[in-house]
Structures are given as C-alpha cells and as structure tokens.
Image (cartoon, each protein chain N blue to C red):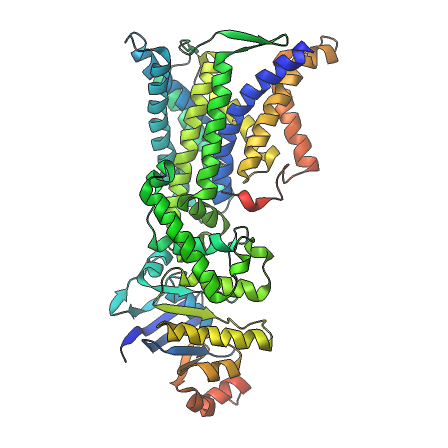
Length: 254
Length: 307
C-alpha cells in the first residue's frame, strides 16, 4: 500500500510543556488509522499541528509525496486534509447547506468580479455548488435539515454536518476528532457504518476516539500517544495487549 | 403637520447616508471585532477627492450627472486603495494584539488622515458645484429636491446590492464564515486575510459613495467633516446592533429621522431656548439611551446576519 501521510519527529511545545515529542507515524492510502491515548496525551494537538492551526516547532510532515511546509490552514485544506472537531465548530448562524458550501470554498473560484456581475460561469458554479452540497447532506443523512441554521440541529446531526462540511473540501485524508463523543449506542453504530462507507469510497481516515470498541472494530492500525510520545503503533489486537499501553491507560509504577 | 413631513424627508436623506457609513463600521466590527474609528475620515477623503475631480471636469462640457459619476468613481478608487492600505499597515500587524492597541491605532489613523487632508485641501470650506438636478417638488406641503431623491435611491440600491452580495454569493458566505470563526473558515480554504482586505475595500467604497452624497446634500465639504459624521454613523451602527448589516441600515435611517425631527421641534419644545443647531445632541442622546437599555442594539440578538 502507498503511504499517504508521513510524520517524522513532529514536535510541539507550549511554554515549558512538551505537548508532542518527536512523534513519527505513517498512514497508508485507504486505511482507517486510529490515534488513541489518555486525556492530555497530545492527540488533538497533533491534529492541530497537522492541519496548520498550530505551527509545529520541529519535524516534517509529507502528504501524498509532497512535503507540507509550515502551511496555513487554507493551504493544508488545498493539499487535501480535512478535519472535524472534538467540540463541534460549525458556522452556527449559517444554514446546514451554507456550511457545506463554505467547505467547498477551496475547490471553487468565483471572486469579487463574479459576485458583482453574476456572469454565466458564476451562476453555473453556484448551482453546481448547491447540488454538491445537497448531495453531501444526503450522503451523511441530514438532507431534510438543509435550510435549518446549524445551531438548531440535533447534536448527532451537527456531527454529521461537520463531516459533510469536511468532505466538501474533497479531502484525501479525513481527520475525525472524537466523532462518537456524546453519542448513544445507536448513533455510534450508524457513525461506524458512515465511516466504513467513506473508506469504501476511497477515503483515508485518521480517527481520534475514546470509544475503544469503535476504534478496535473500525481501525486497521492504531497508534497510542502518552505524554506527547508515541508508545505503540500496530494492528488493534496487538496494541490492546501491549504492556506499555495498558500501563498508560491504567496508570502504572512508572 | 407640514414640518413633520418635511423633517421626515430630510431625516430619510440624512439617514440613508448614515446607513451607508454605518455599514462600513459594522462590517469591520463583524469580522474583526474592531471599531475602525478612521472610517469617518475615509468618507471625508471620498468627498474631497470627488470634489477635486469634479472641479477639474466642471468646464469640460460634460453633463453634470456624468461629471458627478466620474467624480464618484475616482473617489471610490481612492477610498478603496486607502481602506486596503489602512488595514494592511495599521491593523494587520496588530491582529493578535490586545484589543485596545488597534482601537488606539484607529484613532491615530483618523488624526493622520485628517491632517493629510488638511495639507492637501487646506483648511477652508469648499463649496460643491450643484451638478445634479436640483429642482424642488412639493408633496402635502413639504418640499423635497431631486438631489434628495437621488441620494435615497442610490443608497437604497447600494445597500440592497450589499445584502445580496453577503447573503447570496460565495464571497459573502466566506465573509460570514470568517466573521464567525476565521480559523475554521481557513480550514475550509477561505483565506481570511484576503476576506478581511476585501471587507475594508467594500466598506471604503460605500464610504466614498456616502462622501459624494453628503457633499451633494449640503453643498459643502471640508477636512474635518468626517469626524462628526463618522461618530454619528458609529452611533447608528450601535443603535442597530453592531455587527449586524440590517441593523446598520435600520439604525442609520432611524438616527437620521430622530435627528431631523429633533432639530425641527426642539425650538418649540424648549420655548425657543435651544435652536436647531442642537441637532447633534439627539444622536448622542440616542446612543446613551441605547447603551443603557439595549446595549446589544435594536437587532443585536439576531447575529445571523453578521458579516
């Protein structure tokens, strides 16, 4: 399998706190890759560094064979990495459809001139954009809420909307930060089939998750972070039996 | 009764100019949380630079409205370049600084622009050639000029266009997304810096239009006209709920009408002690009342139309 993302020695500190210590990992094309670890282990920090929200202090990330410089978020989006957030961050006052349409921003072009003169190409682009947004809303199963303002959506639907918005950027890698957080068993089960569907459609998925059953049932490989360091990377079954991992989760004599 | 209608007409004229300027304040506030106190000076520079062009063309034999239109285009270009530069030079370096720093900077920019305008155009009051149709008409005992009709119509059309831009286009969605959360908008491929620049450029174009209209309305322009106008437009934006586009329009028109009615009746109300030159008092009285009773403005809770 070809490598999609390779992180080498990624380091990040906040003041004196070392949030990520030389984290290296490799994500292959088409796999579902889990990133787990106790609270505060640096999982979300890794996401933030990966997506350009935080500048990294050291290390290199290559994506699809190209080195990602210390890129700004919109350049990362353009390269093909999209994400969702642990604490949902939609554009709360815009409709579900508009949220997805903003997600499509990176792949559309109409600028000031188009906005003012509404020429043929702009109108066509806008119509296509709207169709694509509706398609994505249908894909995640919330097409009936398209015209509702995002903050009025039910919690589970907001999570789905965030995924639709991320998909609108046409990502090669979709990074999901605790997508099952706060979901009940039924919602989690349908989330699982949604993620499996994404992979079947050719997407690579990076998943941070606390729900161990979900991670073990879904991921091809799993990396474990503890205090900003990668302590294991393997198939789920071996990671589960790794003494270092058990110690990190249960607290040990170390 | 006739004075009532007369003052309503005058108030609508003044109010639509306030609304155009208030939109500039509210757009920048919506996207950056910054009160751009230099915005009034942009209006002033719009008025004076259009005047320069209009004077150059006054004897060219072109019809009056065409000359005004050319003056407006020139003013718009000057102001758009100015707005872009102000953001780039004065505000962008302070994007992550404590809120007071850009606020003080805005006041500084305002002073710098005023002084530059004084050096360029002098301290005197310039009279604006009456090039627009100025015939007066009478309705129910109140008179209005064609200039007033033009002002209200142009302002209304421009504001409708802005609403469409913000609510119906890709650019407008990007502006609203950036206003809600610049970092997340960035993840969607929205270049926040570009959107912020554009916000200043669009606001400045509206300011240029307002400057030309206000000069046409009063027939006069001078280097410190932007200060009080800016302050009142800011009041209008707060009155409507700052950050809210529709609020800025409502606040602007309302403030214009309140002011005109106040000026019309203050003599009667105070038995002739205070005259219509106390008109400015009303704007700031309204500001104080709003801040006490409804600090988020008339349409403040409806943040969905932020831009």
